[in-house]
Amino acid sequence: MDEPIRHPLAYARFLRGWPQSELVARMHRAARMRPEGLRCGADKAAVSRWENGRKKPDAESQLLIADAFDVPASDLERYPWPHWLPGREEPVQLGSTYTVHALRDAQRAVMDHERRTFLTYSALALAGLASQWATLEPDRLTPAADGTYVDDALMSWLEETGTKLTALPTEKRQYMIKLAEAHMDTVTDLLERGRSSDPTKQRLHLLASSLASTCGWYRFDQGQHYAAGKLWHAALSNAHTARDRDQGAGVLSDFAYQAIWLGKPQAAVEPLSQALIHTRHPAARSALHLRRARAHAAMGNAGACLQDLKDAEVALLTDTPDPAPSWCQWMSTADLAVDSGQCMLDLGRTQEAHNRIEEGLSLLPRSRDKTRGVFRTYEARSLIQAQEIEQALAVSTESLDLAQRIGAVRCVKLVRDLAPAFRPYKSVNGVPELLERLRAC
Image 1 (tube, rainbow, N blue to C red):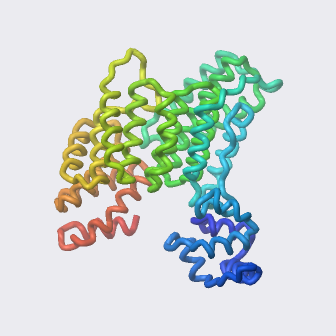
Image 2: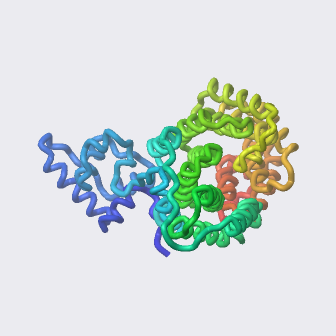
Image 3: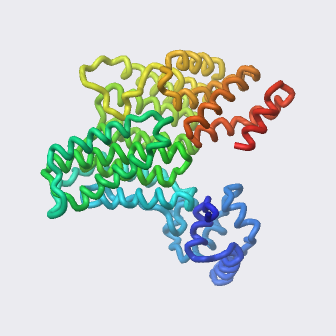
C-alpha cells in the first residue's frame, strides 16, 4: 500500500516527482535568482518540519517555495499557507450541469482515500460553496435524451431502497456501506444516461444527495476526511439542483461538523450562518445554532456561543406541525445538553460542563450508540478535568469498547486523544492498561 500523503507540501512534491532534497535545491536556486538577494536557510530537516506541521515556513521561505513551484506571488496573498500550493482542491460549481461530475468526483475520492489524507476544503472554499448555495438560482432540470426511462414504479423502488440504506444504524452500516455506494452509483448512472420527467429527475437528485450524505458520514467515521468532503460536496450539489433548502442546510452542517472536529472551527461559522438564513424548521435551526455554538466555543467566543445555545434551546422548544427534515430528526434535548456541556468544557467551565453532559447522557436513547460513544468521551474529559480519574477511566473504557464494536475509527481516535490527560495518573489502578490499549489501537 502507498504511504499516505499527509500535507499539501508533500503532495505538491509528489506531483512533481521531487524528493525533499530537490525542493531544497530549487529554493536555494530561487534565492540566488531573486534581485533582492534573499538568503535561503532551508534544508531537508526544515522541509520535514513543514510537512509534519511542526513549523510554518516564514514569509521569505514561502516566497522561495512559490518560486520553486512556479506559483505566482499573488496566490500567496489570496490563500493562506498551505492552501496556495499546487494541487489544492477547488470545489466543483453548483448547478445541474455539475451534479453528475460531483458524484463521479466523490466516487474517485473514495478510491483514492489512502493518498491525500490531509485534504479537506479550506475555510475559503467552504464559504464559497455556502454562498453559491444561498444565492445561485438552481438550473432548470433537463431530462437526458437516451437510456433507461425512470418511471414512477422504478423511482419509488429506488427511494424505498435508499431510505432503508440511509436509515441503518452505524453498527450495521459498516457492513452495508458497499450496498449504499452501489445504490448511489445506480442513481448516478440514471442521472447521467437515463430519461425521466422533470419531477422524477428532481427526486433522483434528492435521492443522490441523501445517499452521498450517508456515504460521506461513513467515510468521516473512518477518518477518511478527503472522501467525506467530496461526497458531501456531491450531496450539496444535488440538493441544490433538487431545490431542497433543508437538505442543503443539512449538508452544510455536515461540512461544519467536520471542520470543528478537525480543529478548524473558523471554517464552520460561515456555512452554518448561511444555512440558518435559509432554513425555517425549528429542529433544523436548533441543530445549526448548536453546531455554531460549538464553533464559537472552540474559538473562545463565549458571548456568541452562549447566544447560539440560547437560540438552539428556544428553537428546539418551538412547536410545529411539520416533520423535521430527515438530516436532523435525531436532534433532541439530549444533544442540546451534551453539546452545551462540550461548549462549557471549551470555555473552561468544568463543573457546569460535567452537569450538562451527565444530564444529556441520561436522556439519550440506547439506539444511538455512536452518539453515546462520542458523548461518553466528552464526559471522560470533563471527569479528568475534575480529577475524578477512576470514573473517567470507566467511562473511557466503555467509549472505546463501543467505538471498536461499531467500527467508527474517528471515535476510537477521540478516545485515544485522551491519553495525554491520563498519563499523569499512571499510579491509578487500570490507567496503565488503558494507556497500553490506546497505544495499540
